[in-house]
Image (cartoon, rainbow, N blue to C red; front, side):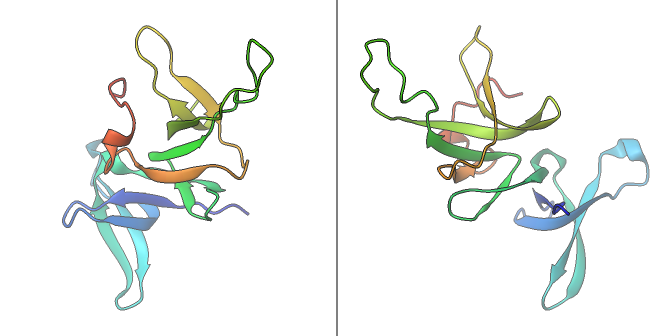
Amino acid sequence: MREILFRAKTVKNVHWIWGDLFHAGTEPSDGEFAISYWDDEDGWMNENVQPGTIGQFTGLTDKNGKRIFEGDIVECVSWNEYFSKDGKPMEPFRRKMFVDYRKGGFKMVEPMPEPMKDNEWDIICNGDIVIIGNIYDDPQLIDMKRLG
């Protein structure tokens, strides 16, 4: 069985919480959400969250065992580091990408300048992916101009 988990920033204190996501409004169209989570001192808690910061756990962890969530910025060695035009190995370089849900699955997305399309890769457990931040707290880590 896979773990279903969400994280988001709270409306009141603007800190991160993790738990079960549910619709908190009076109407489905009002866009209010909350997360229910366990607090060791107070038991089960519910807090309203900022909808724009909601991210789902991908089911995978980075090389340090940290859970990878939608919205995380990750870094890994480029997949094409071993290919070159002259037959000599290229110097390895690291790519920074953000995690997003696209085309029915979680992808690592590298924003590209217009008119090119963003590069997208399935998240794979290659032992090299490391979380370096997220698009909400650390947007300076990646070129986010194309995100809307």
